[in-house]
Amino acid sequence: MNQREAHITVKDLTMAYGDFVIQRNLNFTIQHGDIFLVMGGSGCGKSTIMRALVGLKEPAKGQVLYDGINFWEAEPGERDRTMRRFGVMFQRGALWSSMTLAENVALSLEQYTDLSPGQIREVVSLKLAMVGLSGFEEFYPSEISGGMQKRVGVARAMALDPDILFFDEPSAGLDPVSSRRLDDLILELRDSLGSTMVVVTHELASIFAIGNNSVFLDPETRTMIASGHPKKLLAESRDPKVHKFLTRGEEGARKQ
Amino acid sequence: MEIEPGQYEMSFSRPNEDTLLVRLAGNWRIGGRLPSADDVQKQIDSGPRIQRVAFSTEGLTDWGSGLLTFLIKVIRQCSRKKIRVEKAGLPKGAVKLIALASAVPEEKGSQKEGVREPFLSRIGESAIAFGRSVVEMLGFIGEATVAFMRLLKGKARFRRSDFTLTIQQCGVQALPIVSLISLLVGLILAFVGAIQLMMFGAQIYVASLVGIAMVRVMGAIMTGIIMAGRTGAAFAAQLGTMQVNEEIDALKTLGISPMEFLVLPRMLALVLMMPLLCLYADLMGILGGLIVGVGMLDLTAVEYFNQTKASITLNYFWIGLFHSAVFGVLVALAGCLRGLQCGRSSSAVGDAATSAVVTGIVSIIVATAIITIICNVLGV
Image (tube, rainbow over all chains, first blue to last red; front, side, top):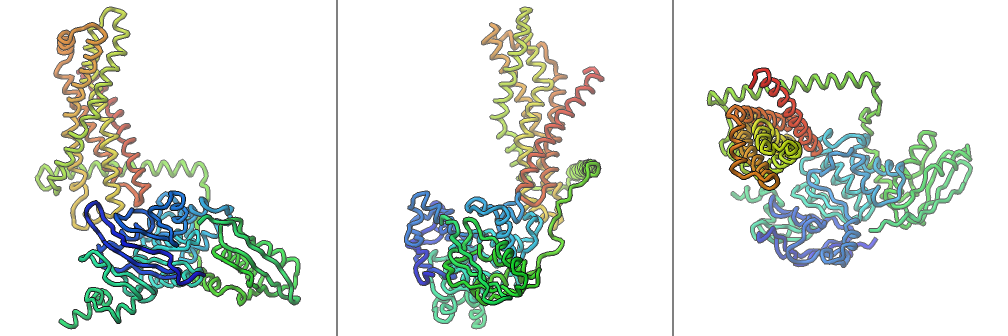
């Protein structure tokens, strides 16, 4: 495994909706096998950054490089190939409501592999079992709970064993046990398959449990104000905003 | 990633009598044809005294879900035959992921069985469902009436801005499409009539034909159908999406009746706007007839106008307006009913919109038939 090599590089990235700048001048590098966290309070543009990384929203300025390939300036074919290396889990699952859970997970396998229907069924069962939903193949998304929908979203994202998995707020709305299970799954997939994980989150428990690198976005200055291992950030960062975030504001409250 | 077909290799050996050693090598990622666990099964069956299966994976270059599904199947087959599977030779990550996948037992009874109901039972089911939907529809009409009564008493709770916004959406904004369709319908009626009437030299009666047809019923029917497709579907889609997003539940928890807050303003707006649109459609239809009359039949505009004026009475207008007010209620009811009945998924919103249009158009036609019969009996 080519560990410690830059997998995703973000250079001078600026995201904006029209004239309204969400985040500017972002620079960070995600190594192969990293569990990289995009942190920050609600509304700071975490999800927007993820949309730029996964090819859903073109940045206003700057570059996103995948193994050195400039994603947004690449040929459409090249870009498609790069996108097929991703798996993306959306905030609320984003399952296709007219398909069963099995069909949701199977779609990419049907489109991009030569597996037989029987083998696809086996892979789908495996993926659903990995997220703890064995036996729910024939259910429709509207028949299961929101937390379960999210887990199916994870199963769908990892259908093709992608090199990079993106998670948008994976543990929000999950019970503590499921949330912990999902964290374990993220760690396990990274350790076993060497996938790179990019996690957009503001759940402190997950941040310290899984992250080994991170970037902290600030909604006021609209740029990154810290980066690095979250535990190190907690110990070493002098920025009061970062500190407040990583301690749930408890230190500030105690001082008062 | 172009997914390369897996270049996997698998070979078997028997280091001692009761052991089967499976040697796995190459690339075991998903992509191409996956290896079959049945090959292992065949090996086990060929040596009846095999008590355990072990793996050697030194030559394994890369692996993914392909290896995992293979291993899970082998383990399942072996456990059925009470053969021990040695996991020591497998990649550690694979063992962990298999453990993870089997950590939560399969939800028993959650597998849906595809039992096909017998024919008669299906007929019965749909008859019961039909009965239930009729009861639901009647209940909805009842609730709408109660809400309307509360409005008359000045107790209904809704926002005036919603009401005016809906008036704008289903009134002014519908004018372009109503103009186009009514003009063309008037034109078509005139054409069809002209061919027959010209045989008798009675082309002047094209004006009567178009005038009476448009004013009495066609204007109302055309606006009704346009509004069912345009506004009825929009109501259903909007309320359906609100249902999906739990917005309607949020209203209920505040003690606000969705019937008053959502249905009432829409229904009132449509009932007010439909007769106005109908009048406008009548005018456009007559204009369409005029274009044919003047352009093709050598009538003058004044002749055409006088003939139209002579043949339509105020009664016809009232009948037309009554039609359109009824259609307004029907389209709004169909749209809101289907919207509120919507399931909790995006495909259910599509179904709701479709069903609103179908219900709207069917009820428009049925209502027209009933009103026509009543008018006949009353002699108007």
